Length: 159
Image (tube, rainbow, N blue to C red):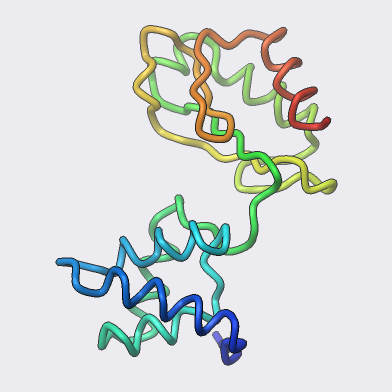
């Protein structure tokens, strides 16, 4: 894995996030979340900067980024749709909902539609088990999904 040096802007923004969060106990995860909030993803070029600031190896930082599925390695679409994949939602038809969304958008999980409108991500429990199946669109939870609601959601993210 060859990493390119960070651009001045990326390095400055990364250093600012690190400076703000470095004092926390176990700062790596909060820093990664901060960078994802700052950039919309965790740019590969930030990993050496983080490693140096925290006295970690690049491999350690890379390992954390790739272990946790919540960290994106590239920018997300304009909308992020997370579909619950937990047991309660599966028992209420989440597989059919997922298949419908993937077919309509032409993408799989962890992918972004070609028009950049939506990124589809799996999530393992949104805490809406009584309203299964559920999803989250741009941070807003949606319960009791069915084929009609999915059609509405796809239409909304495509507009």
